[in-house]
Image (cartoon, rainbow, N blue to C red; front, top):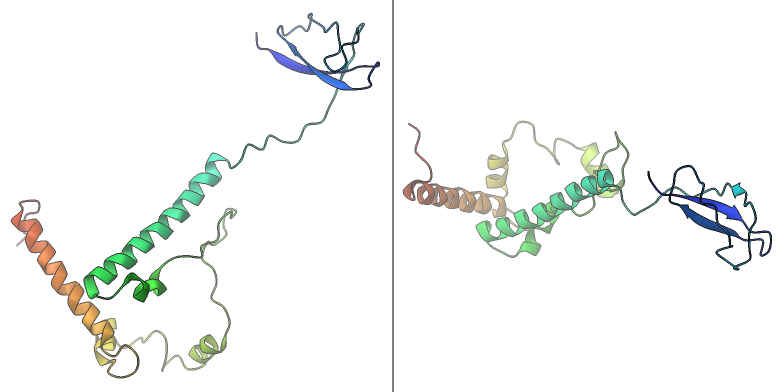
Length: 183
């Protein structure tokens, strides 16, 4: 049998006290009030509404938040890896980090924060052929064509550094016997 608590009313102190019944049939009624110590004859059980059990975050909500935090941590690691591969500091690549995912969402909602409406985004929407995604130009050609302004050739230099470092990593992995070459 499972122990079950029950609430009782004390007419002497007008308080409500909880009594833990050890038997399911409730034959062990309290003799005294737990609050004031007054003798209680034939106590009547009363209903006391309880707030829902809130013990912090549910496992389901915590799992979803852990995914978001993991994505943020992974993006910080990728930022550092970009800095190591292409040169510079991690703060130079902070624009690639995920820092503002919305947590505490319901099913079907999107975690990404929608872009803000500002003069720059309005100008990009008005002239998509001059800004934003270029449909007829590959990213590599666009990076190579950036020859003026802040960070001229930065994209091309980053691409070259990443490509050469990738080749070195492949040679190290193949040379270490951890990967077979496919021909």
